Image 1 (cartoon, one colour):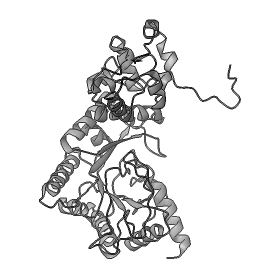
Image 2 (image 1 turned 90 degrees about the vertical axis):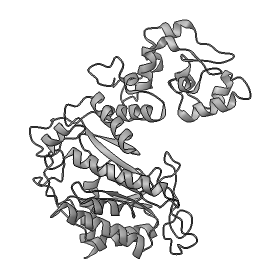
Image 3 (image 1 turned 180 degrees about the vertical axis):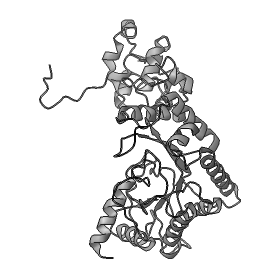
Image 4 (image 1 turned 60 degrees about the horizontal axis):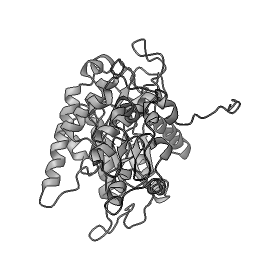
Length: 414
């Protein structure tokens, strides 16, 4: 294989992988190249690998994100790589993926691998190839970087579970929030089969962590992805499905991907893309559910047609519907109430709780904490500041706290 052919494959299969949003690495932990693991290429604690950083868990991970192939025997309506699609096709050999990963790694281009694939021949045939690639990287090449594998729907449980020994994270996409939608748009996939895989993997993760000497088995847990806007499911339906997935399978993340029309997608799918702002609002609501002690009913209280307000972030929308609870005294309020103040993040709340153990907070303390004082001004009080009553009673409060709008280059600022 010459370099031109390899470059063409890379262009096709990297582009085909861009539709998969579920490639975060948070929580995967580090693989050590220390005692007993002398050939630790890519270790974050030794060896000759990369050490980038900064994600929500403090790290930044550059990944080689590719499909093994975009040939596929399934014909999911929403997928650019479906069997009936007329896109350019390509397929990496297993050795090519291994070589690419190792070579990119040695050059500090990447810190890990995200590998998915279309389904060729059978689900087991495809899953076996993915497992062999990950196994070879770990065992033959002593690769200590991050590996995220997509499990293939309908592959045998033994193969899916084996993948967990080599991957930092496994994901299997539910694709659509309801079994009815999946039956309509992806008839070869079954939501019960997908959730059955999640159940088995969750059991294996629990067993590994409960062992006397915990094994490194899918340290980064499971994740999944839902396409939004391809079917008529409301935001309430999507978030309800997410709550259920987090609760039943302890997923690390549910990713949301706004539907984008694809060539020849058929009349069953919307002609227009779903608003990216809707995807953003769902992520914000998801964050409130997981880290801010909100319940689904809190977020959707008063929602029009069970849809989130695109004009306001969900936390601000909740605050405006519950103005009687503000201003919140930052020196006295408990943690759960502080978390509901627009403009206060979870880390800021921790800092406030820590500081007020030693002295009462003043407005200058909020400035020193670099809090968004303009945004929190109507909602908080401290020792030397309390907002005017009229500020909270003003019907047009939304206009005070709206984020600045980016002007067009030729737009008049006045």
